[in-house]
Image (cartoon, rainbow, N blue to C red; front, side, top):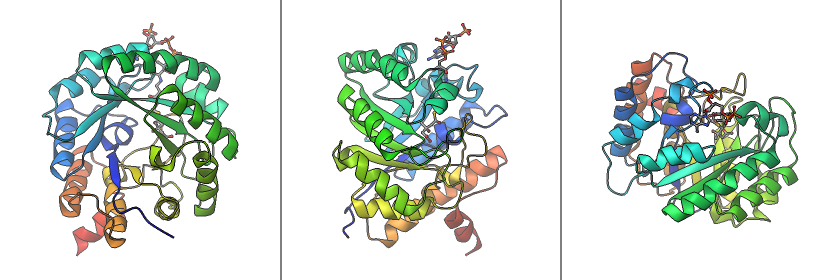
Length: 299
Ligand SMILES: CC(C)(COP(=O)([O-])OP(=O)([O-])OC[C@H]1O[C@@H](n2cnc3c(N)ncnc32)[C@H](O)[C@@H]1OP(=O)([O-])[O-])[C@@H](O)C(=O)NCCC(=O)NCCSC(=O)C[C@@](C)(O)CC(=O)[O-]
């Protein structure tokens, strides 16, 4: 057993955490959230999503968010871009990193981005090419790596196949999404082993949702395997619009508490992060789903 000495946290709260909120959230609230997260020491923040506003209305202000940011030095502000149109709009906002998002499940792919897995890869290829010419890094997501809301079990070999396609296309990192949080530690290890046979471990990230309360256990399991990039959402905000019942991402506060306890460096201030979790949940009228955040409030 050996853990990485440091972990890079990718904070997805402003995007994954908020995208499913039914009531409009003011752009100024999103900008303040992003700024507070940067103030807590987070160095990679997924800030917006250049997707169709008909599909995800909450992300319709992507331009205002990306151009309204008070950029902190050393912080990467990224956004989702499912197609060339999204990428062009993101480039106009001066973006330095984008993400394409595919799935290991055919049905989820159709529900989420309206095309098959093969078609999605065809759509991503020109995005990667154009981004490369513009000097913009591209991250790749694979959804449903530990289960699909429509198809149930997903074979690790399928996850490995889609991950490899994204990596070979030029994604600098592939983030493995347990979209509906059904994974358990042994399953997570098996899936990761299959993917790591195709892609170096240091090019992979874990993106786990906490629907069944397994996300921290699953992260511990994949940290043991060598994962050193973790996606999370402050206060455990979120859910997926195309995965009914999916809870939020694992809470960033809970991840930092775990990593602090393991002596793994992150550069993130847990108290400042927990204060941000309190602030955003009050601002949007949601319960704080971080166990650590709630415990710190009571301490
Ligand atoms: C991908 C599409 C656009 C395909 O949607 P489509 O209907 O197949 O594409 P289309 O090209 O026919 O366009 C349909 C409409 O969208 C517009 N459009 C087309 N592209 C854009 C764009 N970039 N920005 C703004 N508008 C756009 C386009 O102009 C048109 O408008 P209309 O003519 O009907 O008025 C659509 O399915 C979509 O936007 N899906 C969004 C899905 C989404 O955001 N899901 C949540 C994020 S993924 C996730 O949360 C999982 C993850 C990443 O966190 C990992 C995990 O946990 O598993």
